[in-house]
Structure formats: structure tokens, C-alpha cells
Image (cartoon, rainbow, N blue to C red; front, side, top):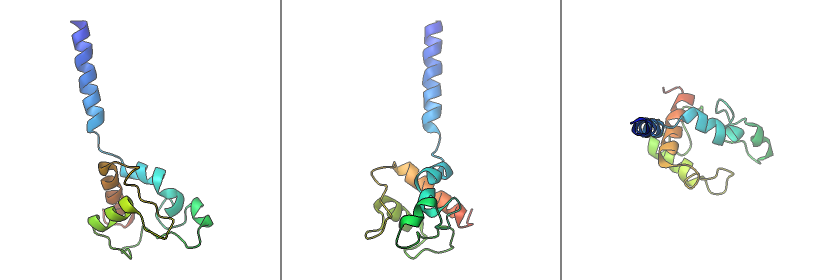
Amino acid sequence: MRRISLLLWLAFSITAVQAAPPDGKALYTTWCAGCHGAKGMGDGPDAKGFDSKPSSLADSSYKRGTSDKAVLKIITKGIPGTPMDGYGNKLKDDQRAALVQYLKVLRGEK
């Protein structure tokens, strides 16, 4: 009986962990802040090595659009001819969606 209880507890624990949504801020800190800066101003420590300053993600508008679809496309595919890599092969769909939502926080929309 104890073994069954332990297995049920493990099953529920694993399900609870898997059900937790990705943390957009933590993902941003890990994958984006190096170039775009902690507050999205384009002033991250890695930005010094670029020919042009990374985009400010805190601006109310972006050159390529601020719709969820436009931002997700940039995160997924990157921007050719720039240091902005695509993360389609590095981050899962729900992680990229969490980043889209966190960028709204940086823009003051949430």
C-alpha cells in the first residue's frame, strides 16, 4: 500500500511540475538580456560587440510590428543580416509564447 501511495504522489508531483507555465521573465533573462539588457533598452553587456545597437524592446512599437504574431516570428526565425538569432530550435512553443507576453511587460502593456 505504501508503494502505491508513493507512486501516486510521484505521478501527481510530476504532473504539477509539467503543468507550470514557462516563466517569461526568467527566459528573457537567460536568452535575451545579454544583448537587449535587463530592462529591454538594447544595452546588454553583449551588445558592445555589435556594429549596431540591439533594438529596444521597451519601446511602444517595433520596426517589424508588436502584434503577438510578429514578435513570435522574430523570436522564432530571428532577423537575417543581424545578430538576432532565431530561437525556434532552442525554445519550445510555450517558452517562445511566454517571451512574447513578457515583452509586453517591458513595453508597459501589462
